[in-house]
Image 1: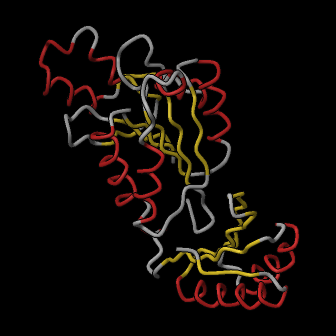
Image 2: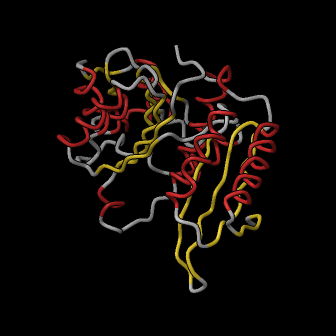
Length: 252
């Protein structure tokens, strides 16, 4: 059962993304959907419609224990291979799901045969994920959730999964992110301070983002996590940077 240490991952499937025919919109929305529940995205992978690579990616993600949302490739056309790859990665047969079949027959009648019914073929043991947009379901296999590539379908389906299955993981306390810009400081000169603040506030994530601007080198030094501890940790960073002799200002 997922607990507070569980990570959330995203797998975005489709040659059209990798070839630049379409721009990915999922990752930014996944980050937003999770953030509104006090959760964070741990990783995101892009994979084309290559059965070998996709099966391998799923084998790896199944082994993590993470909660994973997969977007794309669950249609009925020959380049939709996610259902088959999920079954192969899990070592299960692909079987026709009776509830999914009933939904397809309700929507399409006998026109569901012979091709549309393929969208009811899921790995054995899968559960359906309802699709409020057009009633063609996705599916869950353990804590992997397979959704369509269409954002208008996938995003409410993801929210349903989170609100139905993982509400116990939501962070009820407010979350925050605060940072400051440190000028003309090498990142290496800030490592000890970052480690010290991270050890003092273990529920806070300390991060640094270096950049080079026409005005010179700078590092965005920040913290994110529970709001009360973020307020304390960012103040500790301000004092520490001042003690090191570097100029800083609060990030916008």
